[in-house]
Length: 205
Image (cartoon, rainbow, N blue to C red; front, side):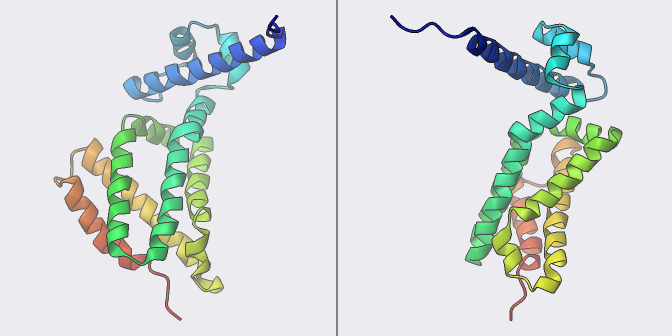
């Protein structure tokens, strides 16, 4: 006869499913209502659980948004900059332009959640620290690029990556979220490539 699942295993599976339901419900609320107007009670009600159950999984809505980022949004960003590390090694402007097009596409795919992320960054001191650490981590994910810079200029190399991230985020906010820049994605990718491909080249010996 097949062995019956252990009670502990069922309990762990139920806990995992509740965790996932909280993340999914919170994501939908953050997308539709923003960050500041969503309360823990709203998330619990959307899941159909009690506040006590919510707090068994998360300390508050800030931690929920951080978890959503860590399990999806931020992980995708890190992969893009790991890919950029490879692209810059090729020395190909065409490869870099293709990367820029993919990066803009990633912003388009994730644009629904980005306003809540920006709102939390403005409102929550701990979230600002998360955002700062996140940008620093992106440069850490580009070891090949950093190794091509003289040791005494590594901080400058990291700054260039951080400024690239900042400009892409600012461009996307003004372009896709505010409609303040009238340009196609292809045109934007071409101009951003003109600016950043030479700016990211490591110094030659």
